[in-house]
Length: 444
Image (cartoon, rainbow, N blue to C red; front, top):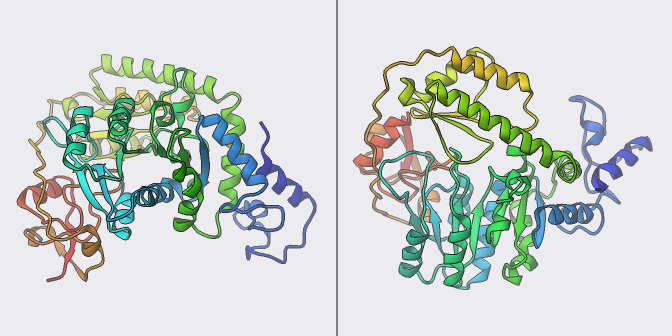
């Protein structure tokens, strides 16, 4: 597979150009990558109006992902999430109403605020509460659509931060039976397309989907995709680039674009084989550690999420132990520890992980608090709260006040409260458990 963006910049560099254009470093190495860092000079194309090398590269990505159109993002999934919300607004005139899983990334909340969306939340189903888990069933979505027939779109996050995946195919079928598109935040699942049995949202019926390529593929931080399904409403394809431009910088990083471009070549060659091997190795690793008493949750094959309390530890304690051995986890909270290996993880890193975990002697299980989330009352709209005068208060002084900031919303989290909702005692208890000590509230 060709790499038109990378090839153009290589040719430009070897021509020993006199750079009388942006960027200001003029190709002089400071970090070392500056010669590869360009702007929209003649021949370099334009991300938001591509006619040549970017268009060709995005078409390569479109074929790889089996989508109707795949557009590059240099602002990660955040840019694509906001674009998806905008496209939903364009698809149905009038006040914007959305049905959304409560574990929405803060980029969804800011987009909803900017577009003054009214959100009907899908709360986690089943007992117990975790900051990052949000199980949503097709029956639950069916009930929500019956209650909110005016919804412009359904928005869900899968996989979640702990590695749990939703039944995207069933959710898509329910949404489509009501004539409503399904939007999926697949930030952690770009690789799902390249498993032996592809299970990417584009394979399962989603209309719009975003991937953070940099989270699970060998792409520079900030590289992402917006995918539009072949079966999505025509408006989504026609207005997608406009939506991306609305929320993206007019100076997209050409370092990130080259990274996305080169990744296409890798995805088309040895990546599926490397991924398959890694998934198999991780399955064996889980099995070995399970034999030593470690408990894992989630069904996402590239995540290792430890349920720490049955072994007598908090996730933060295990994280500190691993860091002392030079291993840096992705995430830890009182209940879980998340590790994100990939085909590019050196084998010695996983061997060290195995050794470090095996060295931890089990302790008596820790009892977790019986956390339950009671949906808090709403005092004002999301937009009103985010655009109101605010003050920051200690948690204990904030009870009864209206939340103004985006507390506990990134990583994609089941926010105990979102801006505009009242901080009840239940919400305060959950914040306290997760170590949130101060919150931004609407000034009275």
